Image (cartoon, rainbow, N blue to C red; front, side, top):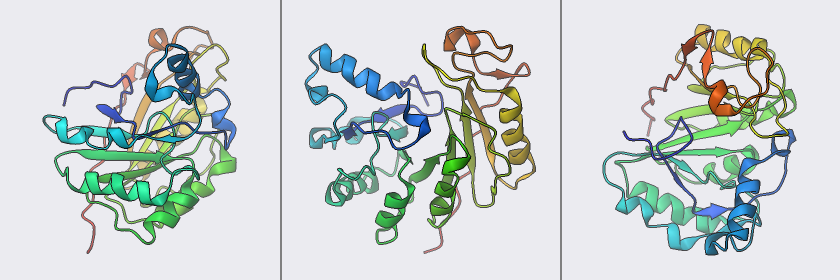
Length: 249
């Protein structure tokens, strides 16, 4: 699959909603908020509201136009399960997903409780991967909500990784993405924190490990651009993907 996205673990993005507001420590230097404000200043109509949560019904049909099989990050510029996004609009998003079985849709949220509330009464499409962000130990309870949902792939995004996460229960977790923070105000990520997660993935049955990037701070503690620091861990690239499970009817 060709990658049209700057996000290495997906191939394209689908921003049927945009905008959000801070909910935890990982939101402090939100790249999406800065980008939305920049696009607003440039006069882009889609971002005329800046980073105020906004639905974009005009974008609902985009997946029908894509050729081939895409790996799609749903709402990279916000959070689909923000409290200001109505469930009836999420229903429309799921209708499109169900009509596009050729694509795989990755939904990542920091609002695991609301995602659970929605999917506890709605069927999870067979081509949907569900994930939660786990940037520090304070938000590890998001994993518990995720595990209650019978998705083909359940994944964690530990980005920006802000501290050692300690012991993780990775049973029923299919994929873990780890990455450091980017930007002038980026907080440093320690190598030991990454290795702790990787070692737990290695011994867990069926948990793939994906190291996305060092971010602004390198392994040797030098501040550079995220591109310069790259994504090598001890000289190796770890870009494993999960194997989706068959969901019982």
